[in-house]
Image 1 (cartoon, rainbow over the protein chains, first blue to last red):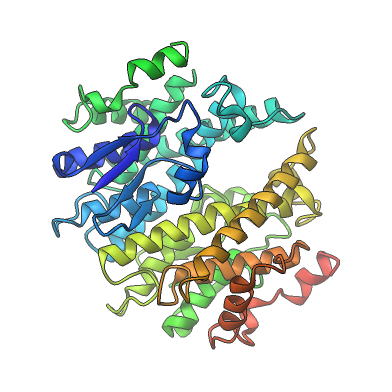
Image 2 (cartoon, rainbow over the protein chains, first blue to last red):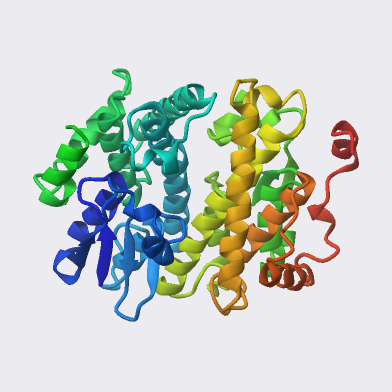
Length: 228
Length: 228
């Protein structure tokens, strides 16, 4: 299998954590996409994924899978023992519900704030993601507020259960953790009163699939080009 | 089981078509939510679904399921014979990928155009969905353009396969069909050159789960209040 992605970015991190949780790292060849250079918005990449985002999983028969929930469902079931995406239809339904909320309320909202309200990925990506327009700043602020509201909703969920889809760690926890990484990068912290969420984050950060993992950090060249 | 929804609206239509495909209509009690009166943005409904959208499926044990893909996955597996959400992990992954694209590129984009670029659901819902701001019109136009781009992407898919996730009708076809209903309502037609998509739509419209179904039309009272 091949994965087209970029180390250190939030959506690639989601799948890299899935691979580590499932012990599948060695079965994947990683091919770097130059996000800072807007490679994901050029024709060659768009032929693989018309929505122009990473990561893309290419199976050995050439099948192309995109979208975190789809890639994670495929990888999680390769060994016939799903642990991250639900083992029964009811578990799968609850995970799909919570994952859609994580995508809409957290991942997409903080992503929009990053691209509309900060320097984003710089001058090469800006025209694709957030061209100048009158409502840019107000839209960014609204997406930030939506993200904070999402954090509060998720904090409520974690007051009565250890993980976001129930008793077990799942892809919902992975995607939410990635959203928090993106928010850190965008200068948006968890509100102090979201105590359940803060405790949950500390617990997830200690997992072997997350802790001290090199593939979750930006490459030196990308750090330099982003002025970091 | 109970479903909280509103007849004739696009997201409720998605689940009503699922119920008809699975022969489950008689097992569900429908409870109408007054969308035109913004009931879905009030505390009582938000306690059931903090994201403030319909439909919500309430199971007999009180479990609340929201989000089309989650509700459809649950209902599709009640008889142990899933036909709409994938029978194998690989089928499920492809359906999840295409359904995420349908949500992002079509359902959400035309929904945003409807609320930001037209009268939407009127004065009671407007403050919740699209308050006045400088970028409102431009944002609406961009969402319309995103939707049209999504139609073209989906038209490409349908040039080489009969349904959006492959050889079988699935929840992706249902959600995409609902997006087209919403677009009609918003005054946005399929471009004439999307011939594969136009032929696919005509085929789906002939299914028993869609054709002449009363639950897919707006109630008379809602028609009147929307000035239609």
